[in-house]
Length: 113
Length: 113
Image 1 (cartoon, rainbow over the protein chains, first blue to last red):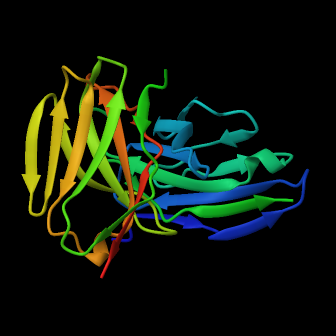
Image 2 (cartoon, rainbow over the protein chains, first blue to last red; image 1 turned 60 degrees about the vertical axis):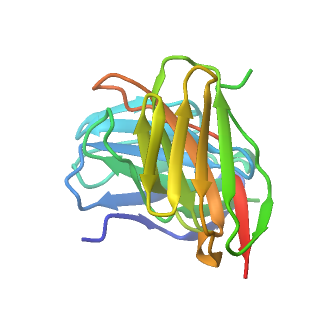
């Protein structure tokens, strides 16, 4: 049981490039989330999904897109990367909402130059 | 006023010390209170959660919630170098369908041998 896995671990992008951050969970969780963590700024929710085919915006969705075609996968797409998107990105999942624990992946460290 | 305030530290203590980590919040609708531990270059992991006011103990860790003061604490007894990490408080309003976690910025703790 690997939990939540993310690829790549690190990536450097040039301004204007695009990329997809991959996230997979093997716990059969319904809810999945994408957060970004900037130094000294805590975790901000980008997008979330309550099940396959259902996604919605979080606090900071601009510049990102998501899709959820399967229960296991929740990729995050960056279009036209900007320096402001330099951050550490975490994917998380939970069985439900309410008190259900959110399990986090190891993160993707992205730098946009 | 920010919804959740957390002193970022850094906090440096000798091994064996009692550590007190704190968060204040402004939203009286928060009912679930969590502490996440995040080791360097890793994803956050849930350490403890409490519902409403009161104390909860788990080994060397005690979580306290004072809803009247809108103040939560995490105490670590007999701190160990392995406790060195960033500690994030997180809160959620009640409701079975509610997914949203509001995080503090995190406190960086170093326990020196």
